Length: 322
Image: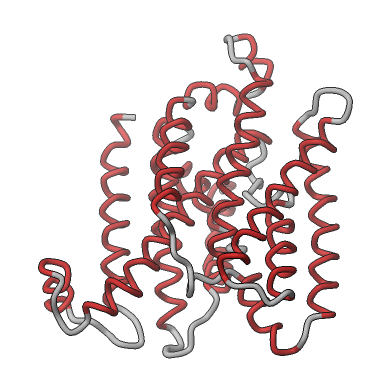
């Protein structure tokens, strides 16, 4: 890990820089001197704009991006599939169905988040129960069960959109594409991310071994059954919380681990903290551009992550195969 310490420090600086950029840019630009004045003594013309709107939104973007990045890393280790992402097991479909049902019932934002989290948990339980059956489950069985369940959730989502009143469609589509406009990340969310990051770092050696194959991991003393269960529920929990806060934001959990493996290698002792920093940084930058590219109109951040993520990921695949 020591050889990758410079890369981790650069990621930390990039994360701090992305937060500063998020505080400065927007429909109302903030000069660097005003920003320093507001941060140093909480005074200045833009104090309310910075501390009540932009800083909470940037912090929410960081924690959601960090969760998605770490969930993607754990899911790829669990399934031993480099194309696995946090949504591959249908968690996002369950969350979206719960959120849309809450919107259709006219509930408030907190109830929408609670419904999304409940739908995600329901999807996690269904995938585990169906994939496990009466015997132990395999990675392929888990993957196929998640894909089929995701298709069922997508059908329900389409049905809910069809029967929804026209005045609610706009908000529903924003949620489905990912939106941080009204997201407030509580302290417990940061604590959860910190605890799971620490746990994942402590499991770096088993993660390295299981990524190379279960037989090799078992031969070297890893309890692969317990590890798979832990990875499944941990990655699913991270995904459920992130989706309940910000909706379905794609490509962060798929792209961040790939980018880091090309730079710092496959050692999870370095990948775990790095993917949290990179995932959070990418989502902060994407949300900043979503707020500013057509200001004062704000785009769903999921549009920006897809626009930037598709060509970036294709380039990474091309570079990796060349």
